[in-house]
Image (cartoon, rainbow, N blue to C red):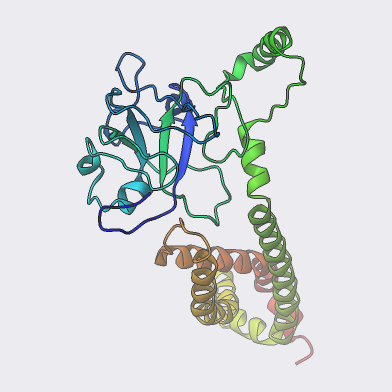
Length: 318
């Protein structure tokens, strides 16, 4: 598409039906969605061709046609808000130009089924009427019929679709559920997530084993100290608190060292995604609290066993 100032940008043209926006829950952020009752909302996709095969220009007196664009197109067209784009004309720089009466009637949020590493491109939605079954939506490289099913009636609905398909076509039906399609597009990201989760689990397990062994050694080395403290009147709870604090200090120190490294690595990883959440400080606090809880749970049993031991057993050889 070419802007009045000469600047151009790439765009995607999605040829969809009137029910496309309802199927994917895409309400109008500004303006309205196409409606069969409104003249001009149904856009003819196939333009007549000349004997040489080139597309002919649309007649000058043809009725105005209406289009819906996404948020990325609003920004690319230079409008400050979606509402500002409503009623504005569209002009194309490739193929047959749009008529000066072609205008924007609605804006929907960015929507794409492409992998999350790709930013949603500026998109113009045509509500097509003569596509010959070629209903292309953003995220699909081939013709596709989009159907929303009720969870309790999926087998019956699929059987009815198969029966209708066989009556009207000899070609085999090729269908896929949306969650499986999206999973195929995002398989690399999912594998990364599974790998990170596995590595984190192994690291946590090794850390817990190390803390358990360290608690056994520390309890054995301080058995006489614990006996003396108990002989001097210390309660078991005080002994347990002393031992737990001993193991809490290295865990807290490790978290303080890990915070900057984790923040830097997560920022770099999230920067690969055009749409991502922002890191919040409380995430690191929750992570530290979780690791501290796991560490204390690991050594609590050994600390409690050492604190309950009778002082005479520790001091009989002294």
